[in-house]
Image 1 (tube, one colour):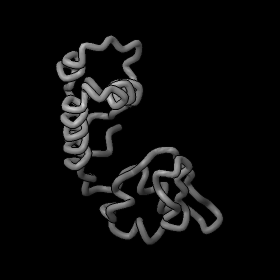
Image 2 (cartoon, one colour):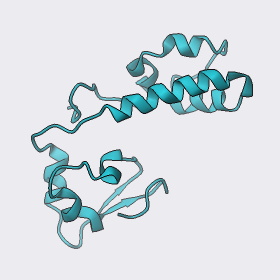
Image 3 (tube, rainbow, N blue to C red):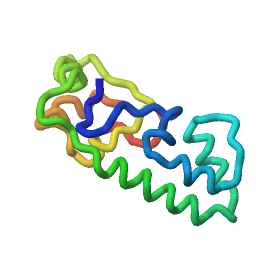
Length: 126
């Protein structure tokens, strides 16, 4: 199930394909032993001679996430958050830009803000 309109479900191992950046990755001239986007990006980032490709890649990734919209109808995740009790919490390693920007469905940010903890230090506890 995809919760974002116009976006198929994305995994880190199919992100290159999802973004349609296979040709950009080939332009690096590197051979990657993995399809994992984080590994590919790390290798590109570590090579100063690939700064132009890295900048282009970063813009494509930025534009992809910037264009995401939540659907108008509640998702299964909305129902999960709304069902939280005071003693419950969500612990996640995933970074969710909708919590940070306040674009989460109406009422959810206030309902669950004390119950969401990011375990990867990209978000402080909301």
